[in-house]
Image 1: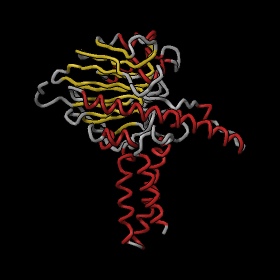
Image 2: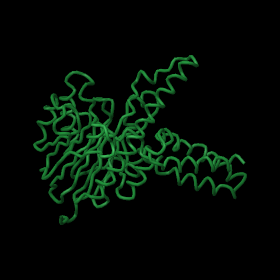
Image 3: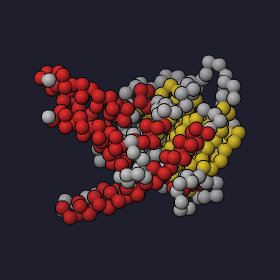
Length: 340
């Protein structure tokens, strides 16, 4: 009975995670909880093999369902030895981490050999140490002080801001995306750089006092913030799927998604793009440092890649210039140039 109950729970939870966040606000919490069911499923699988072999089929089905969101968090591969070019996604926290951090990030990009750098929460007024290393650069929205940016050592032939049309209010959440068509030596690609709505939860919100009243109050407060951001991200997801479909070039979709790889948007994007981290992820665990410091190594920064592009790996760099770690995707050169 316990195994059957676990099976029903896993299937129902998995189905709920596939619903858009604007349908069921708060589904983002389920996306975090769902992969954790791999642990009781593996335990029940081992017990079933010993005592009830006929029932392990339930555990096998559930493990398959949980497989992708689990693998999207685990760095299980070795770093590639040789690469032709690299794309990095980095939420730089407006360079507020400490004085002079933009210079440190600029030096890191060169030591790491980053050819295309996509930043979120980028404050333009102090970004010049980074920009100095990249002759081609675009910002979105173009007329705002803080937003997203794409820096490239390869020519940018076209670019623009992207609008999340389903977000009605004229806010950062509506305009936190941009694209650049970049001419590589052997191909032209479209980089889509996004920053999805944040939960707005700060470190102090997660400091819960031992009293029962304080725990309930803060839990309700955080739940409301998560539900509100889930609604926005559900709406933003519709635009992202449209942008990927309409691209005239192979897409590299990158940015701070403010949610773990899983759920409705991730599942739909996997029909169109590859997640290199699934089987070629390496490096550090967890991309969001405040959660990592509390023992929760979650990756909320994604880079998904058109299967036509010869990616060779993906890893989180273990640096602390921001409250995020940068996610780097490595690519090999094509064997033959592709026609546009």
